Image (cartoon, rainbow, N blue to C red; front, side):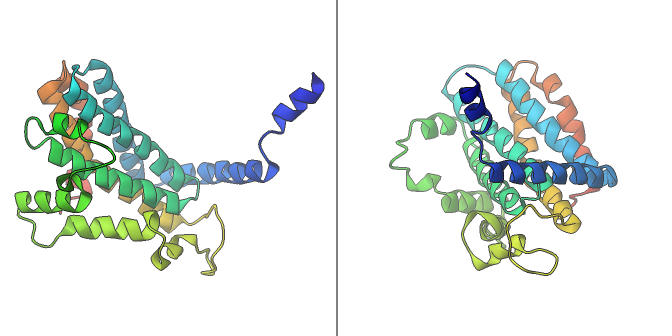
Length: 245
């Protein structure tokens, strides 16, 4: 019995334990940094309120394919939001960029699907092995830009920037793997400026999701106005104080 208990205790290799312990230490430092900056505290509060509203809406939402499609995507952003912030606070800035890109792409898809009745149900019924052209990320970005009258393709620029930094293997992504002397190494990294930028980016990509979730709750979820009221207040505050453009 003692032999097997010993094996169970040692199932995680020591190198992984040391890495995770170092990340835990970085989270303690990152918490202190965030506590010292009111705007970072505000950003985390918005992100937490968004995630809380997603879970509350999941429990209160209607049944049917439309709810499954939209809430399934909102739940995907719930996970990505958590990992995005956790990665940043653990000194894994590349991971933060990867999850931020996922949040951005899911935000675009939700915006497209919610724009017309029937779209979520149609999207849900598509063959995962043969996705129609109209659901491809580039086509969705074009649709949203045309709808909103955006000629500068800012959505594409933001998408490519996060892809370069995190999701796609590229030389540009090495910038998040450099230490203070600009040498490339494994993390975790302890860089205050990068941490602050990561938290700001997380808030920036989650902000439109907050608006979409608030819209969904008010229109389709029982007691949705009440459920999303806190999120609505924090959304308004964040837009007015930090993201006015």
